Each structure stands twice: as C-alpha cells, then as structure tokens.
Image (cartoon, rainbow, N blue to C red; front, side, top):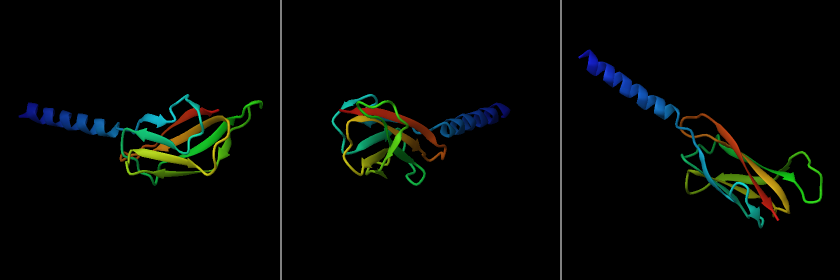
Length: 125
C-alpha cells in the first residue's frame, strides 16, 4: 500500500512541476529575427501558449538609423494587441517605419503568471 501512495505522490508532483515550468516561448515572429526588408505594416509574435493580454505587452524601439552613429534606442509609437489566436501578439506602428534597425522588446505572461521577456531585432531598408 505504501508503494502505491508513494507512486501517486511522485506522479502528482511531477505533473505539477511540469505545469509550473510551462512558460510561454516565442516560436516565431514576422518579420523574423535578423530579417532585412521592407517596412512591415505590423509585427506579429507567435508564442507556445495562450497569452494573458492584460499582463503581456511590447515596446517598439528604433536602435539605429542609416548614416548616423549609434544612438540610444528611441521608442516608436505603436499599438500592441492580441489577435484572434490567443497565442499571438500584434504590434502595429502608428506611422510607417523608416529605414533603420528596430527591436521589439516583449513581455509574455500565460496562465502560470510568470512573465517571460525577450526581443526581436529586424532591419528596414
């Protein structure tokens, strides 16, 4: 009998620890990390889990401009929202992006309520 109890306790413990470690991971982005190309009308981040939009968010920053020395990142006005897919975050710049290097600094929170942060960098030509 004690063997069965021990097995059940261990199984439940493993299950709960697996759930506690289930953090959202960035699976892909459009534009992709390191991409170079035309200015996107929107930036999409696709995560491994449904996001809690109330606690998730992003900032769009311009980190470099052609022909200019490096400068401090400059915030770019943008709307951050969810989408029909609860695993997606959409960043829509308020104005078309000009040539330069941009970084999306994101914060994702899923059902485990543990915030995960990261960034995606891309270049507009």
